[in-house]
Length: 78
Length: 230
Image (cartoon, rainbow over all chains, first blue to last red):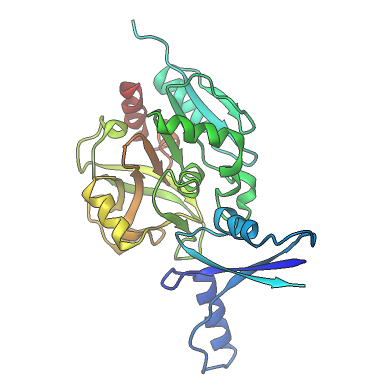
């Protein structure tokens, strides 16, 4: 089983990298773009013996994301 | 005569200011610090702990986060609760916010640039870490970081202000605090803070690099203050 953990900045947190990417896309000619939210994801592979959701949640909160500045979302994939 | 004091410096893979700090401590305090490898599980006796600058674990995931899971940091947390003074400089500050000993987080510099320059700081609150400075004194330390943009939400910011937990702010030489003199986008120009109990200090600038003839010497007073508090 795979858990995919998505992480991105909370609204209002400055992400200069996303700003630079947005500016570049604008420079490439796209004028309709309004906003870009950049994030990352982790695929965590586990065995099928039990549901590890709670544990993945704990890992996401304590290690993969910083709750002061980031949100996370977990999606279960089979 | 004063009882001999023990100062510890924790070293992580990727720390690179540990030697600068060691030399600054030796020269300014006359104490040879204990160098503690991050895998140490038991810090027996220490009067103060430094977390040095650098790039612990290559800044993987987020600056400072991997270091917070090392055994030595469990000891730092334990000792901080008992009141042991802890000082985190640069990457050390990032580690202290990541392990929740200090409020807030350090984001990428708003300019996206690695900033390596001398800056002016105002000592906005006096406490035992800065007892040698006058309140609102302007000092010069160098900075060298790409993730020093201090962020904290407005509610926490108010708490920091009300409790006088903000120690250093980026400023002009004349003491003007505004955006023009903010090297990294930090909220309210914050460069260094303490925890509520005021025994844990984190700052992005490097006092240990401001203690020699070729640089600003303003950091010497920082180390003198540290000596006085032991």
